[in-house]
Amino acid sequence: MEHEEAVRLQMTEQYLLDELSPEAREEFEEHYFDCHECAVDVGAGAAFVEQSKIVLAEREEPVLASQLPPQPSPWWAWFRPALVLPVLAMLLAVVTYQNLVSVPRLLEAANHPRELPWTTVNIGTLGSDGAVIPVRSGEGFVLLLRIPLQRGYTSYTADLYDPNQILEWTITLPVTMARDASARDQRAVQVPGAKRKSGTYSVVVRGATEGGGSEEVGRGSFELQVQ
Amino acid sequence: MEFYDEFDDDYLERLRREDYWTQKHFVAYFSKLLHIKLKSRLRSRQDVEDVQQIIFARFFHNLRKENGIRDAKCLGSYVNSICNNVLLEHYRQRVPDQIDDPIANSIPDPSRNALDTVVDEEAKRIVREILESLPERDQRILREIFLEERDKDEICKDYGVSRNYLRVLVLRAKNKFREKMLQDPPGPKGKAAD
Image (cartoon, rainbow over all chains, first blue to last red):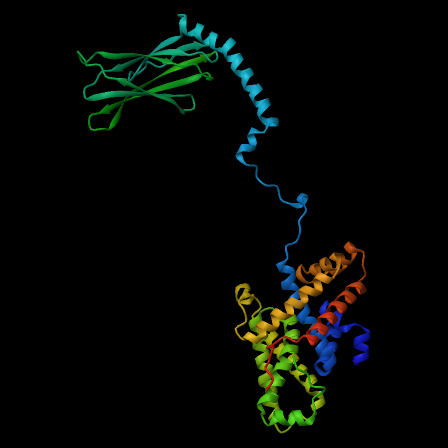
């Protein structure tokens, strides 16, 4: 390659822009290693490119607001009128409904006597399963637990399991001092209303020992019929 | 970078006699050219330095041979051909899954001295001046070519310019840089007259 040809074809610029084919690149390299003028040109161009990268990297590229990533809103953004006014109006409606409808109904229900479905569950007695309690959906009921009296327990715990044997709740019951060995401790437990399904529920009673342990006293079951 | 008009027999003879200043000039001159070439072929700075050392070692070894380099005018071609051979050997030896260490590449080159740093700072100042004198659009084009390394066809499409426009843009900027570097060469200034 002749120098004039290299200049005419802008070989230095093509070399710096990495536009040359591998063959043309090697041909030009062979030329500029021998051509002082082209060597100066390539050297100056390479230095310019190298320094340009540094200078351009130092500058901050202006970014349009629309290109900025969304910033997380501060917590006080919740107090913007556009958001807080509808929320306050909704809260006011809820409070009004509770004061005018829900609370009077609950008070009335709490202050008036009513009969609850109930059944006796004999704990630890063979052949006593099968007591049936018919309840309305969401209605509570009463379980009369009859626990055989045994010495040595400081308290009882009663666990209620649903038909899938999943623990529904636990209650701690005090122990009554036994007068004779055949006596039973009777405890009435009110089971709050809940969305239950029909099926066989079981109650497991455990006695807490003085040493801090516990052991099963017995279990019983009943049939809940949700109507 | 200092340049001789051309390499002659006298220069070659001084090299052969291991003249200190001639050797120093030779290494400085070809180091720059080799660095430009090797940087486009090798990814790590360490590889560039290693290959460069092998090229010089091989050149000086051949220089001392009886049937070594004869024609001073072909000195550049000779260095270039050694470079090509060493590169091929390097590619063959290179472990295929060898990866570059970006941390090592980012550490300042310890072989650079204080004068190199002064030259770099001056070059940077001149480049900054040149870039600031360009229209905003041309500055963005150069940024996308060199810094962001975007596809050049896409750049041309985005800015509605031709590939020749890019070449002319680089040519003008480079010529300005060259002119300013020659006008105001970096290095120690204010030397007292004896």
